[in-house]
Image (cartoon, rainbow, N blue to C red; front, side):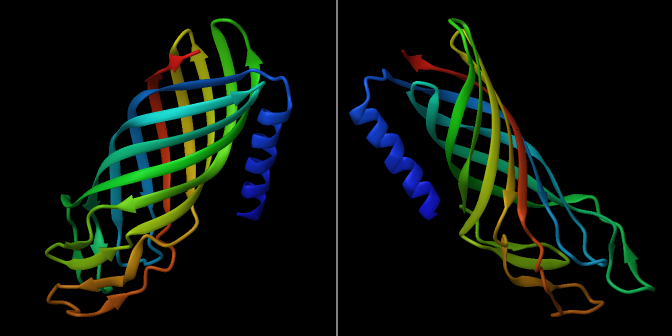
Amino acid sequence: MKKVVLFLSWFLLMATTSNAQVKFYYGPKVGYKANSLSINRGDLMLYPKGYVTLGVFGRIMIKDFIIQPELMYNYSELYEGSVTFDPVNIINLNGVVSINHSIALPIYLGYQFVGRNNFNMRANVGPIVHFNIDDFIESMYQEWNYRFMNLGAALNIGVDIYRFTFDICYSMGLTNAIKGGVVLNSNIHPGERHNADTDRLNTFSITLGYRFGK
């Protein structure tokens, strides 16, 4: 975090003390996002499905350096499947057990390594914060609580063609997404709590946007 603050301070100092032209862009984004929520249990398998992401972004450029915050709304579905609670009993499920609504707030720091009139390429990295709108989830076989906030680290590669923006982003979860583990509701081991110590939220997204400004 200290390195991020130092970088932002250097960035703002550069903007105020140099003769570099400062550019500002903003606009909407929409796309597809897939997430991977892994739980380190052989007898519990949760399958996240792809979902929609949409929101807005802003981009400050000083020469070829970039600061780009975004505010994105995400919709996802979580499926259960092939759940084994003990060596004898195997339950095969194939249904939606959770519909999750969340907000993502990434702050990218990057560099534009190709800059032409109608074609630009850039690479960004930075922290991302996920805010889960939904809290308590209960299905026929288990229940759990999402943490309100999860932290991650994101890498983004982007291309600008005229005023359209294309971005591919991968985010690696740094904190757990489920609070207190998963509790079984089945008749096999009712009330048993499964530790979810590797439930990191990793995401992959492809988005299309349109930028205003100059």
